[in-house]
Amino acid sequence: MSVRRVQRRDPTTGSTREYWMVDVDYEHPDGRRERVRKVSPVPTRRGAEEYERKIRAELLNPTQKRKEAPLFSQFVDERWLPTYPASAGNRATTIKEKEGHLKLYLKPAFALVRLDDIRGERVDRFFADLTKKVGPKTRKNVRATLRRILASAVEWEILDTIPKLPRVKVPDSKFDHLSREESDALIAAARDAQEHALFVFALHTGARAGEQLAIEWGDVDFRNRKIIFRRSSVHGVVGPTKSGRERKVPMTDTLKKALEAIRHSRGANVFCDEEGKPLTIWMLHHRLLSASARADVRKVRWHDLRHSFASQLVTAGVPIRQVQDWLGHASITMTMRYSHLAPGSGTDLIKALETNGNLTATRAKAS
Image: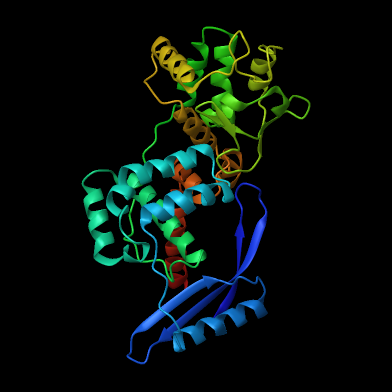
């Protein structure tokens, strides 16, 4: 039987969803091969096996012509956008990004194309044209949106299979980071207690800008000396963290003193203006730019303070796995970008080859 159990973790709730996938590879009498992969409507092995038999029977004895697939724009506007992002727990920024992909790239190319015609040369031509307009990272993200739409069409039994889409290779993104000395100079250039706490918080927790803007006093555990990241603010909209999970970062002595110095009762947010309103990302950028000039430190982005947190930890010998946990990376692959900064970076370990070689030579002479 071509059935298998699949488990998928929901990044928003952390719960695991289990379902059964049916995968049928069928050869028609004329030699044409057709592969059908669908999720069983009954989430049990027996239900999946019964569903597989039904699919094979339909392939063997087609009783009616398949219902005509809807136009891409019709499917997206009437069914996919109102349903999928919410059911998947997408953040507001993720939904906005998908809407941008649709408006700028996908709808102009496929609006009046039926879903089952989005394949082959048509898709290759689309991505070839996209290469002339945007960089590889945007192409990869647009591809992900298109594939998700087509995957939903398969899961909702509108299409039989997901068409093959060209793979997009994205080169490793470069990042900048401050040294320990530069970080200290930046903190020393702070104009007031709040600005001092802003810089220390970013450099000592590795918080994303949105996470720092959304941090509340209830997330600061002075007793156990921990910072708890539960939410993120993007364009003023507060939602879950990027990973959808809560994480904790130990509080350094320097950070503890900095936060104690700005404790206030103007509102729940740690970082806010005189009226208790949360700061904005533009305020963070402005303060960083001004402080960098005063400290004679080169210009960096606010996100580079997160890179500085990770880079300084790895340079000091903190294990990559621990840094991954504090950063909240879902995959160790993301954290490995800092591995070259680890002490030695394997230079001492590679000498084991020479040591073994010398040992072998010594034994040969002895014999």
